[in-house]
Length: 499
Image 1 (tube, one colour):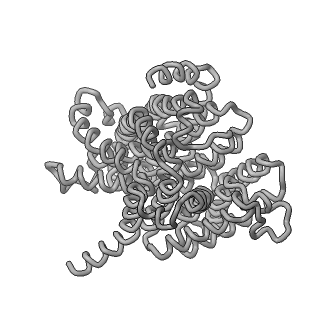
Image 2 (image 1 turned 30 degrees about the vertical axis):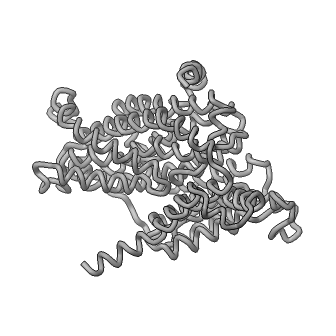
Image 3 (image 1 turned 90 degrees about the vertical axis):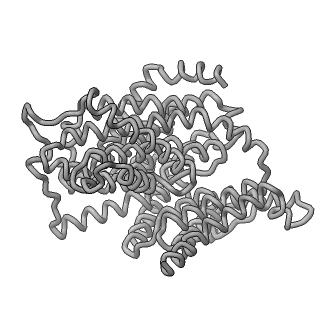
């Protein structure tokens, strides 16, 4: 393992890859800083532009976009009280209050430093935990892969949707879309209606771009029509010699307990499929408030709240890749989209990836670590400059998203059918947003559907009895965890109702 780390580092540090990481991280920060855009959308839009790149370079670009966007969400959270990404919601509790007190720069510097600390801890966890889990995953058979796919899907559906029923309905819709095309086992055409373009099904990236990017264009246009505006405050970025700044002497010692606690919370939450940065931020913030000597200051502009939120927020990034790389199960929606990026480059996530392509896997791990330091440099010295992107006219923002979505989609197969499909799923995504139906379970259904179906049928073909998919030791454990993830929210509500 050590030889793979050493050899992959040399490849990761080539001039081309370093430039790719710098550009993608800077782009990610700007994407995250723009309210409404997210790491999910940024990675989805980026993937088509990595087709012509070497696999490692393309993955490093995704790593930079991912890390940069997760941190970038804190910029608008502090400056405008509008979270740029879902995980930055908690940052608004104290970050914007600090900005209104004239401590905007202090809040932004605290945010980027804590983001880098959490991201670095997460990257180290990825580097040292994932290889050992990959060895364990090699012992998994088709039945275990089926259940771990169902577990990941059920966890997303129950914990991220707010409603188990809505989550499952959207997950089943995604599963249905994943069945369109040629059956991988029998070769039968399913739901193609004699349309040659549907014989291979809908490309995953086309669906993802449609579900996430196009609804955002419509929502921005709606805001323009309704005349909604984001108002800034003159005190958001103080510009005087006496403004408070982050200093190593006073802040490092105070931050250390929060960094340690929040990093551990973020890493554990990231490994759990479906949890995500929002949950990690809320839990970390709650723990920081509980441990604080002055809990009454939380929500009124205490830097401790920003430390807890941003450290946990970014500690999720690399750890969410642990189940993706070792089991092929995305830890969150962003890593689900990155699975599509891996597949496009001919890489199949799972334990065999560590055996067949160790240079690329360990190179990606180094990329997740290095991009945190790039993010720290860009964020610390460029916070004021990045904040200017918030002034971009909404008309230009909407047009840019639409153009990038169309060009990126067309470049996948040079097919207008893909563009029409992307627009169709964009309308579907908009309808889901208006009806408050969760998109994440549908996305995971599309990603995990083929894996779950194929492995289930393989398990049934080699089993002496269908009950073997339940009775194998690991299968039974995964089955029990699946039931727990589905019924836990219901039990929690019933318990809360009795209390």
